[in-house]
Image (tube, rainbow over all chains, first blue to last red; front, side, top):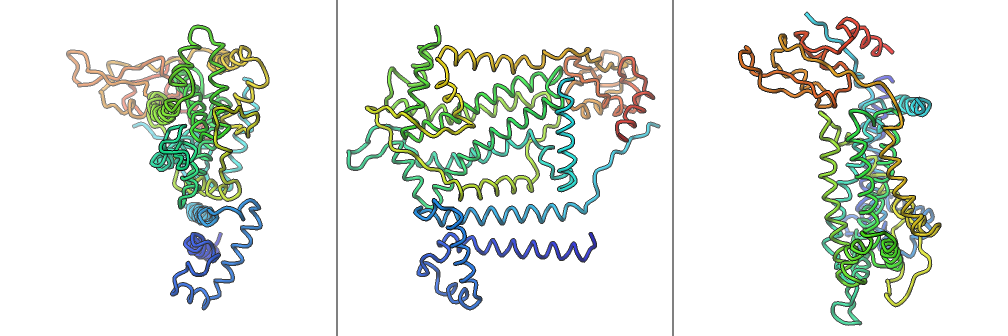
Length: 113
Length: 377
């Protein structure tokens, strides 16, 4: 893999990883299920950046995927762990990609004098 | 060797994973460390659950304000992150059993369970049985209908055992019948035996010079991530609260821990115990079914040994012990080989700079050729 391609891969992985981590506190707030629970400053910022729609889309997607979750009062905590898991997974992939470039261990036979 | 084809499959799998994630992050190279990772996850999540758990079956205050094992589990499920911690605890247990079974199969297929590794194999079986029993006690603690059914089935299964059956039942129930003390006992068994796993692990590792105890962070992240994602799809739930006057007729089976109870329903209890005991004996005897020639242990050339300890440090099986040199020697220490631990691998021969340790019937030059060939292969 060329250095440029490698750098781009790492950059994309890191950005997505940070992006997912941002979702964690939002997930704990129920993924905007009750907008009142979101602090005003964050709410304005979310609206301004348009992330609000993305978060709502994430909530609907997760609820659709997990049929039994609609009723659960603990949805936000499960969602938090879900995004934590995704972030950890991406971090692992990024570390593997970085570690891939390191030289492999080689067998060196000692020579007796 | 009958495990050769299976060994080829595991080696092919190893190479395929190496091609994807490199040997540094191949979980197959940390198969022994994976159960231990899940053990730490279980200890930490269990500690949080223990902080809220009340081990009683009766109401502590009044019928309206019922506080017992079941209601505390319900309470844990509804506090922030309580349900997720409970889920992590449950699935980490399942994952631990999977990891132990994979570890067991791998050491079996790669023929690393016999001769000088017999202590690891036997202690591993004891550890697996302990893990299964500890996991089952975890299901009793929830105190829903399933817990009651499992408790009764276990107590009933002890009835058929001669001599030890009655004392075992008494110990299990902490009395003649199910009372508050029964759940205290379950909690003690669940936590007490979990800590005794550490002692078992010490025996499991005692003959290994450099056991791999923890997988690299990347693998730890991956495993924890899988647990976290799994929670959303399969949240942990409880059944109805156990009522001593009723007998539950059906319950959901967790196949990792509760398969013995399924077995109980398929045969009479005498046959059940016979199957379990025979299974354990066959597992223990597995290393003795294969006849191979004795390992020829390394030998120390006393006159040449300088007591530098290099061979002792390099030996993977702790088979070389440094003892005080005999009177009149110029050196302080002398290497001695514990033949029952020696695998005849030749690592010590390579480590010694003074040609003071040899493998019988194998010249130094032959050994170098052998190592070179295996390194190239």
